[in-house]
Length: 452
Image (cartoon, rainbow, N blue to C red; front, side, top):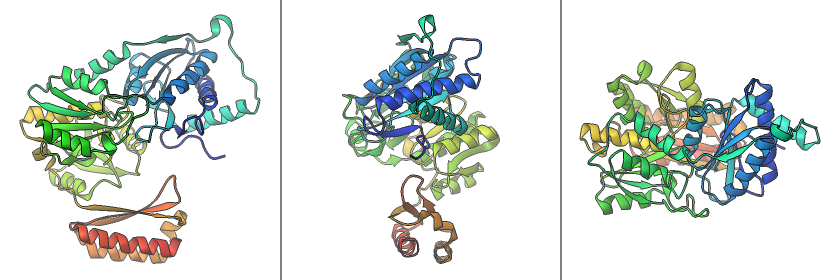
């Protein structure tokens, strides 16, 4: 059996891969591992548990709560809230553990479990490994001390979580959004209530789509993975901009007044300039990934802002930020981390900060986003190849060198083995889209012939 924990918790098809038994067992194991690590010393442990609106989240939440309480952990059940809200409340309430049930942008049948440590930070890999090891031990019959009587955990609903989180978002905004008309696509997910409420309290006129979750329609042709509905709605309502979230609202993409998409790189560029202006861009640096558009890198160079690039994945962006004291980072997909105000990507916070910049400058989003020119980017997935030989195959290295020579300083090539599938991703950027397609096609053929 492979490792249960991936780059963002444990995910799988609910009730097939991710069962109630697994959710319960992992929760018990997490309580034991954190207890042994000293997290619960000298006090009764408390956990915050939240979920997105997926139907399967109802029984998985029950299993997680049962597991934690059976291990002697008191549970604050916050209900349907975004992942960053659970992270925030874990820290704000002084809880020892946070648990979020969500599969983010994945389709409805999937679900996932993500654990947060005290302070609302993601668990270290070492702790995840110990949780998994403990879970497997329990599953094999290893006994554990079960509290009885007053020692069992108590469970209560914490309905104040919604207002506390929204108040936090409003409290960190640099200015209000009065005079702006904004369309919000909640992806029928965890932000369906939170995001419209936050934008409205900040002063914006709000139009909503994708804000009627029924447990089955999360991410269904809506949200940040299907932005076409938001583009149409912004134009139809004559809005200043639109904001799209994913299922658990840890990401945000935007649309300008003409319906043109503003991706995560462009959002980072706008926020980087705003934060530098206010003195909040620590070390004059923004963190991106190797998949960040070359146009973003060129824009930051032109503006005199340093760019640090990490491996793909918001956890790697966050690690770099925490290790080096940076304040802003993110991905093209819309995971944006503003570390002074959040411990993880927060789509609602990102959207609010972007709108606040529009309101403060009086400039349309399209003009602000124009600080960078997004170069055409072509991504080709080459399946069924030996991805382990990407860096050690001479013919492939030669092909990449020739492609880079052809593109010169106006483009780049990236070959990246998938972290979860037997495929290699070929990414090519160029000033001309036809050239990008041609180069990507040739490289994909070489990957297939040499690694297939």
